[in-house]
Length: 64
Length: 493
Image 1 (tube, each protein chain N blue to C red):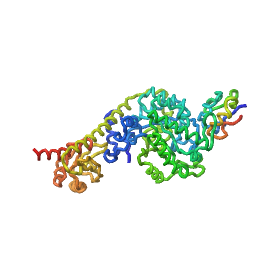
Image 2 (image 1 turned 60 degrees about the vertical axis):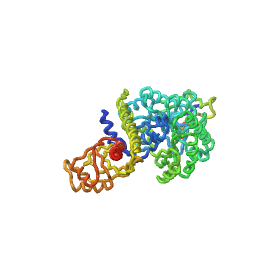
Image 3 (image 1 turned 135 degrees about the vertical axis):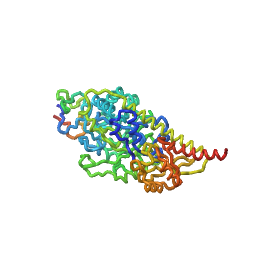
Image 4 (image 1 turned 180 degrees about the vertical axis):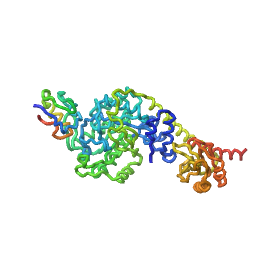
């Protein structure tokens, strides 16, 4: 139960890192990655996963 | 046509004299011909003090000062139909397009390097891509670092307004006295055609809800800023068929809420940019459509007409972009701020502007005091910079002013063939000059020989270099006073 970032589409804007309630998203090399060990899909925090809701590119923050 | 100071000459000009020369030979508008739009005479002193060094807020300042943008805040909280966040091309020049995203530390190094090289630098802006207020931590960190290193640089930011009300208190605390808010509508129905979604309070909103929230937040932010005397520029993207007529209402509303300046920008929509508007064939306005809208709004509103829609990483005077000279691979790892060039340049500009204005006002006062009804044409030999600074024989044109008790007014140019041909004068050419100066009473120049002076005199035209290197208006006033003021005195004596 975790989300992942489709690296090829990511604009590296960092909005997801900013919004993630679990601090599960960080820069790794040139791109952002989601730590599946920390990601809860925002369960218990918000109705929808924040990374997907804020991402400017559709289908880029998706269920792993 | 605005002429800018030749940066090439300033880039290498280390000395005060060189900078002064570069500035004085830059041409630009003659003071008496351009009127005083947005000048110190039109604005309350506290407002003029805020805008006088900001090239985007003052048409007058953009002749002298430069801005730079740093792209440190790439995250955004709304989607606009004229923006594609993936787009990145160094050949394009438009808002939101940028080649290099910087960390706050990199931004500090870049700003320092530019400040050391570009003495005109007066403003640091954070203007996308992304939203400076939404990605606030990076914006604030950048401004904190730069303000500590270069205390006299002006800070400004651009925002879509959605996160703005959350940060107005900090904006005021940080002495950011210029904020640009992009407001494309004041009717959420119109907004539905511009904004597909927003991200607000931990969820994505679409349709009318999104536009309503955005509108309310924009109005709230605008009111909070103006209540704190922070100058607000409203940018509006003119989208034909969607908000073009509506912008009249936008103008009315933002003006009533205290916006300082309204900047209508034409939609840029090229299918190659991959924006929603670009891909769906939404066209931008034609130049005459934009002008017609601006003209409708110009009554009683300050409209910005010198906007160049610069890149989000632009560096330099408006209309030029030196951003490619200052990409991070050109910026040293360690760079210390050297205030000397900027301080020298600022003192020269202040001197030039203050002296010029004082001289114009003084000239008007002196003319009004002369008891004469004469209205005469005066020809000036000038190389630019507002001064009488050209040799008579070197002039290829004379600037003609009308002088009377009502003041000094620019009338036009008289083109002539250059009289001096390397040390000797050509009689036939002088005849042509005399013909071109028909109706002129006196020529004021930096230097004139006896021979052409006598020929002019025989044709009823006086010529003198007594006012060499004076400001044009001051020289004319002094000549008028000496000529007509003395005549009255001698009559009454």
